[in-house]
Image 1: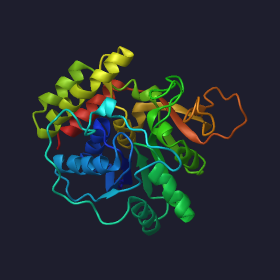
Image 2 (image 1 turned 135 degrees about the vertical axis):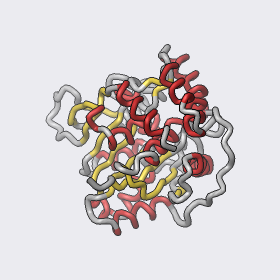
Image 3 (image 1 turned 60 degrees about the horizontal axis):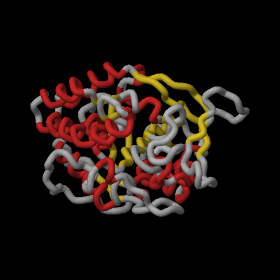
Image 4 (image 1 turned 90 degrees about the horizontal axis):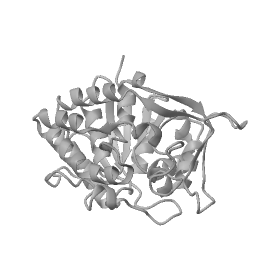
Length: 313
């Protein structure tokens, strides 16, 4: 079976970095066409820089990295330095990237790629706010039907919110963009907080990353050492959840995940619940299902895959 062609749209973020590393370590299953950066965890200048740092860490300077939208469609940018640190990749000391940004805008790269690849062969993998994806869909409506699938990290139902009482960060940052994407009619897989909060980096799991002894394993261990402090303090959990690697792990081992095909609507009107993902988990409305909403995973299998693949880099 041919590797799945993907574009990763991202706002790195330590967990974004691990998601990218997992994809780059899995050429049998994943062909990375490019990485598009968006403002989110930190401003665009840093997310575009961090994406290149991660590519260089993995030894993959051949992957084009494009800078995209520097703010949400209609709202003021909210960032998350309180979680990820001032750089977005606090923890390890990694050198500034030598590889340049690819020329052109991320949105145009998404449009051009979907127009030139065979229809139904490119999967979009957003790991941050959905601004770039929504902008591409709005600017070039002809590309929407050419998307094979959208596998994204965002939203929550049972876990409610992590940036507000009701909203997950990625969706809250740009709810209008999320609304466009969820109404696009394309197949969507949602890695919600309900599943990512079960992908916890416990001490034995982080020790396994560090014990790999390669630059990647040590850097990943240092990243999770840094950002686990936030979740341990907030949730009283054993470690940090690896949100975004759930996206790339799903592409490699979908059997590790389970969920329901339900309707998901995005709140864009109420400031009280702005960015809430209203998932009809119990099927109590007549709204048509539009997303596979993931709620559980085999955590041991997930971390075994992650450790095995990071050892390759």
